[in-house]
Image (spheres, rainbow, N blue to C red):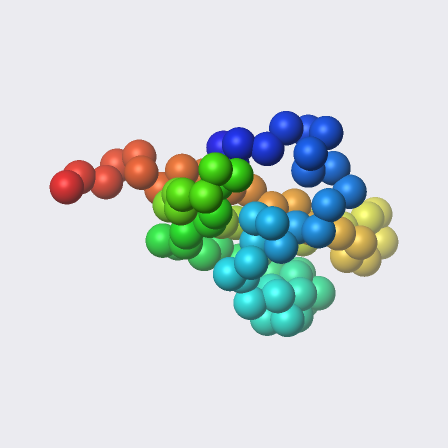
Length: 83
């Protein structure tokens, strides 16, 4: 979606893609066990152009309901839009 290969993006700072997310607010909500959805967000493609996406951040919990990570889902927001 963003033009990066697996080799280019693994172990890189995610600010390459997620520079617009309010990181502190997102981390707070994830630590509270909340799923967050951001609509009408623009992200930077590797070639420099912006793409419209929907972003969903979901907390990942272990068997003791402790949050140990998060999954970020990016979806194209072009689907369903009409000019």
